[in-house]
Image (cartoon, rainbow, N blue to C red; front, side, top):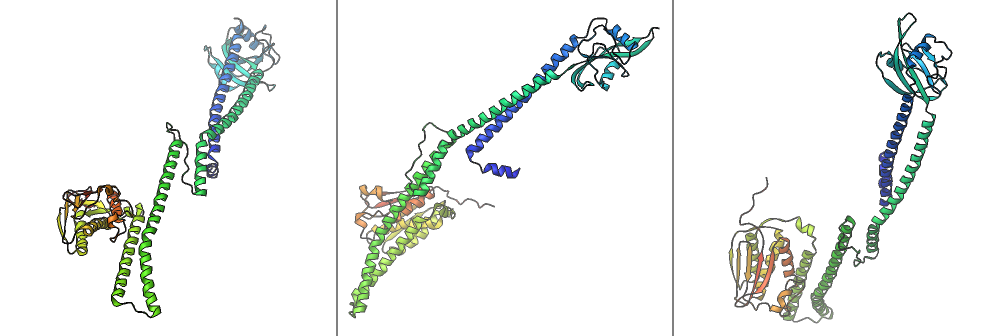
Length: 482
């Protein structure tokens, strides 16, 4: 059975649907056919039983049956046309049989017949199927008549009448009906299978289109393909088609962003690599030609090489951060003290801008985020503030109720540039001479969004820029799970 089920599951869906429809129709047709056959059989038997009852004979049948029993021999007894053209016989309670002269044969007596005859003074009709002595199948009726009496008026055994008619015509009708029902059922099952196959093909046509689309994408990597779906269709195939269209659209967008990232990264990497190659070639040529570079110029070249290597390392780190999958980031999410994270970022910022004054007012707040990513995002915001602050300037940092603000007193960001500050590799024209990859604020935006918050940059009153980070959380840490 398991092998059959496994074999069935390997068949195409349309074939399975057609087979299931055919099986369901076959079951229904079989149930109706069998029910119809038994109903017709019952009606025919009722008609036979009615005919047998109508042939019970005139009122003198009891007297004639008694005479037949008294004068009973092996030869048929004259009962004056008691039952014509039937299997008719008089039977005593002990099973003695007297054949009437107009009977066409004898019927085998059963114990049930004797039991009916023994019920004296009870007029009961008993019907059954039986077999005549000549092998003919018959419909039998047994009826109690009365006790017999002899010439002296003494009571004798109870007697009954057993009458039967052949079932040949009835069985032929039933056999013909069974054949007709079988043919109709077969035609119905075949038609149902064909209809099920046609319906399956029509219903699975969208699935065929979806399969062709998937095979086309796998073969050509063309993510622009779309499956047409009716707007008002809400069936499972339409939902699957919409999901496929949404998936290919997301993949196409992801590929476009990936290609853009690669192109932008290549562009950003080209500048430091070119500078590195130039400086290293100068140093190499000096060694090969034996013409030493003046100590001050050599020191400047080495400092430039070191700066370019630092910039490359920072860019590669930013690219690695952006390339991490969402699943990799989600595995390290935990409850984090926002206050402690900002304090750790402030320590790093003070080292990078020792000449600046950084004032901080931090209140406790706990959020769900990846600790290292959140600290990197805050460091990027503070780095921008340090980078654009004038010498001896001041930076104000405040944290309260989950809102972190970082305000510097630098030149500020022009209003027309504010919509682009969180784009990858975007750098303000006025800041392109400064170190940086243009990925810092993009990393900040993504990290804050993954933590369920939002980040904005705006011009501050009186000059400078104010960065605002809002993160959902609570002022106290949640209790640890037991």
